[in-house]
Length: 106
Image 1 (cartoon, rainbow, N blue to C red):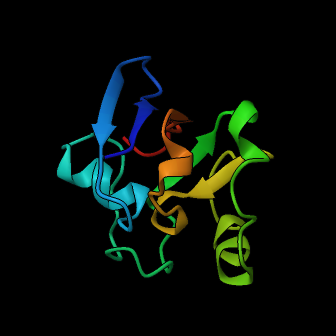
Image 2 (spheres, rainbow, N blue to C red):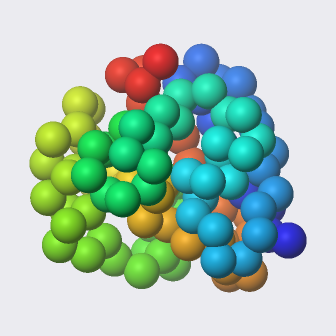
């Protein structure tokens, strides 16, 4: 199973192993990572799974679709590499992915 790292705004790191096909959000929830609220359950309608993809990974992921881009307009502290973890799919290609969580999702 692919592994990825989630870094809380405090610097605490979580190594997450998730099944191919799951969302990064679901993998984080299953691993009990704090800071991924996922209020909408992954339907891309709340932006409470906002994260920052490390710059070295940003170009390796598929670009956000229009619904995700619209939701990202509502997040606190957006960055160039802002994404919604519910829209990032776990594939073998994301093995080693690093994402950071904003302070606004405590």
